[in-house]
Length: 429
Image (cartoon, rainbow, N blue to C red):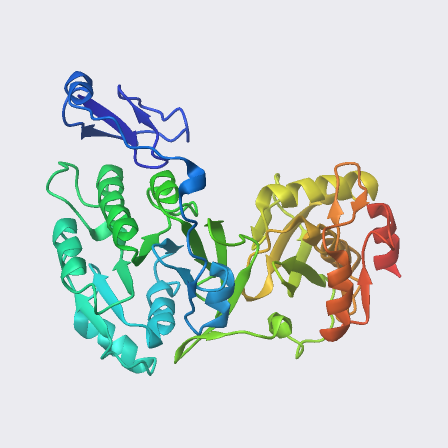
């Protein structure tokens, strides 16, 4: 029986749709073949064995650390035996480079469908990583890959698939990289990892919309999904966990791209360029990501527009969130923002996802409108509601504690201002 699967979100249907009912994209359904009929499968089915949950042994909490503190922090302390991890990110962001640096001291099996062995070795040499403990193959047929993993199972602890989109199986008629191919190949590798208690890391690409290619399929199959973020033009990279069965999803890892690879960043105030003097439209934001406080520099440029519809450009800030903040500022501060083009950016090519940055973003916009400088030793933290109220955010006590350690003299939060209208008065001063 034929089945149609959306290549964007993985939604399945027995009939073809021009527009996917789930993700609303057009012409994304691909036909896949489903082997056997329901009747034949049900007639041959054997009852599964079951036992009481109380009689089963718990999974070991023992972890395999990588000696890369930033990477281990995101995983929850290191890899868990039998864990399958998906490392996602845009092409060229540094996924392969990060993994090679992580595997520097661990016996590994590197399966690459995108680079030759010479290219991988050249990168390892550049990073100063000894490659005598790393096995390598260019095999792309998933059954052959699994056979190789079984053959050399005593010579590695972690297997890396770079990337999961390049594997294929002749059992599926769809082309390489299709949803059905990715689903089948990943399922077989996950099954192998669980049966043999092996750690496998998939490298996956991200689409132009920021989703993992074949997103729903892969995210449901693996134990942990981590994503490497950052603009190619920027040297900074953030590693975030989007799913983690064995740890928290709040932690982030900080890295800086250099000629020698991705270096760990231990000082979160590195994102603030202290060589530049205070200027209108520049504000410092502090947020909590997991167990650490991070400083961001938000820059806003507000200039008179010559267009019928003014421009709104956001980089590193959610566009819809920016529109919401502009509406709140327009109403509560009586500012006619319709006659301005507004550009908002997070310095360093980073991305802020926490709503606690609302107050800092609003302060930078108002500062640019009023052409008033904001001190760089003052940071803003607080969420802004639709009614213009400034709300407290989680773990504000930790923010206050870390602020002094990071060299900040003052934190502007909901303890100081309760409505955004007060922020306008404060910025003008």
